[in-house]
Amino acid sequence: MTDPAGIRALRSLNARMDALGKQVMVCVEKKLPPEPCMCRYPAELAAVQKEHQSVIQVYPDWATRAVAWTDSPSGTPVGHTIVIANLGPQLGRCAAR
Image (tube, rainbow, N blue to C red; front, side):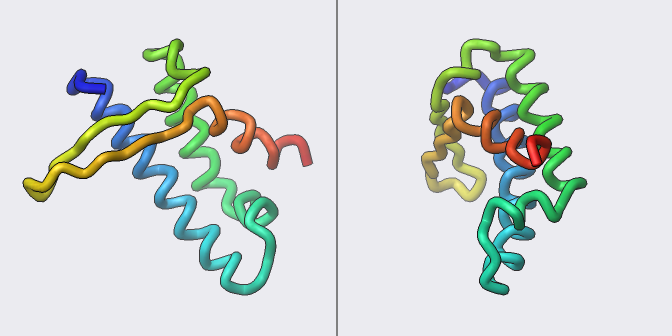
């Protein structure tokens, strides 16, 4: 991905995923399984779901793919990949409970 708007969308989704991931790690450190931990943070989960849906609306072909991009906020290029195809089903697991 090299399109600046696409990279901004991926950065935003990645930031939401990181925020949820930090919360889940606190829970996992207490020896609880990751999946129920994710469901314990509905606000963070909802933010990731909303961002995911927003990205899919603008870039529908990403729904079935992994998307990679390079970012260099500190001047050193860093590669990132989000497997968007797997993200939707993972996010829906809490709703299925």
